[in-house]
Image (cartoon, rainbow, N blue to C red; front, side, top):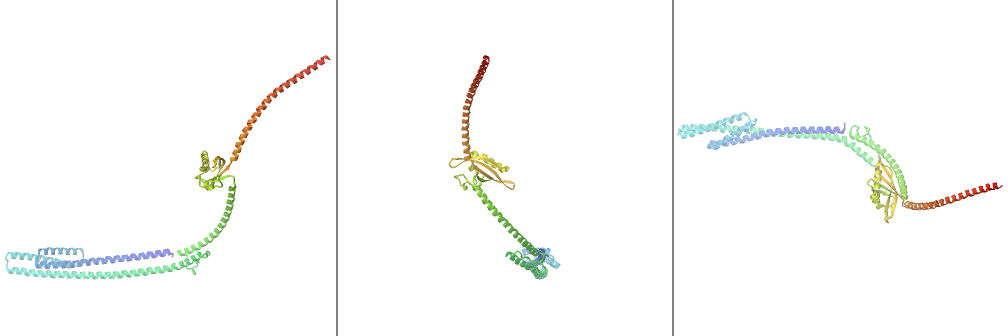
Amino acid sequence: MTIRKRLLINAIISIGLVCILALLWYISYRQITEETRKYTMASELVQQMTDLIIVTEEYLTYQYPRSEQQWHAKYNDILIILEQTTIFPTSISDKLDKLYRSFSQIKSIYDQKEIMIQNSASNEEIKRKIILEERISANMRLTSREIITETSIISNVIHTDRDAIFIRDIVMIFTYIFFIIIVLLTNAYVLIKRIIPPLSKLVEGASIIESGELNYNFSMAEKESHFRPDDEIGELATSFNSMTRKLVDSLKKQESEIEERHQAEELLLASEEKLSSITENSSDHIMLIGQDLKIQFINKTVPGLKKEDVIGKNVNDFIPKDFQKLANDKVQSLFKTGKPTSYQTEYLTTKEEVNYFDVRLSPIIKEGKVVSVISSSNNVTERKRAEDELKRHRAHLEELIKERTRELGEKNIELERFNKLFIGREFRIKELKNKVKELEKKNI
């Protein structure tokens, strides 16, 4: 059985015992409350009967109208008490009715006696009334004492029963509490015997593992082990064994990864040193620009600026206003398309000298997204100046060539005219020679 099930069963048993205890306490409380209520009503009836006897004696002695009113009030209170409970026997009600009839007779006799006195009746008649009055008064006193005696007996019996029930219930409840304690202690002892030894073994094994002995394993053999495979502590021991095996494998893998990482770091360091050497010795100005257009890296700066004056600043701070839009458009286009691009820009040095740069932009892509831009700026100021000088020399040379061409053209024209003249003379000389030959032939 698993520890969870055992704890659940113990909890159910404990809750059931506590519920039974609560039920017993509730039943006992109801019984004691009922007996107390009965005792209270009996005591109140005894008190009311005592007051009724006192009022009766006062009325029998003085016949005050106020005493008559008090007697009726006490009598009604007693009736109310008797109607509220059934603990009193009917004999009390009967005697109370008898007392009421006797009181009515006494009152009637009093009234009759007053009339007889007013009518001057004979003393013998008045004496008979007085004797009757005394007899009825004696009966009333006797009936009242019987009622109060009976109610007192009932009150004492109820009080005795209440004390007996209270003592019985207290003994029963404390006995049951003792039984609950015994059951709980027994369950706790069994549970502790089931849990503490394997837990101690588990703590001992954890300390051994903590000291570095990762090859330690908890023995799960039934005869020599405190662990049971069917409870949580046994599962925990099995998990510890699995964990240590995985931890050993993980450490071996981690050592291998650390070695590989160390080699990779050495290669990376060598690569970074090589790259740093290349960038530091490069003639280009190489910058790393983020999406916020802030300079993250620069290999060197133009004269008058230091690296710390540039890194972290916006690239537009070092671009002339006339070229800022062009540069920003090129950078933003590269972030969107990822295609390298280039442009030309100028930079005004602290000495108010204009430097010219050819800028090439290339993307750095991570997970298919352009995260930054490499800007490689080549200072072409000398080349620009040489090109401008060459353009000036070329323009001057073209002027010279044009002048010389014009002069040659004029000389060619003159030469052609002279050639024409020379050719015409040759033709005339040839014609003269031909004529001379013809004349000579004729003369022969």
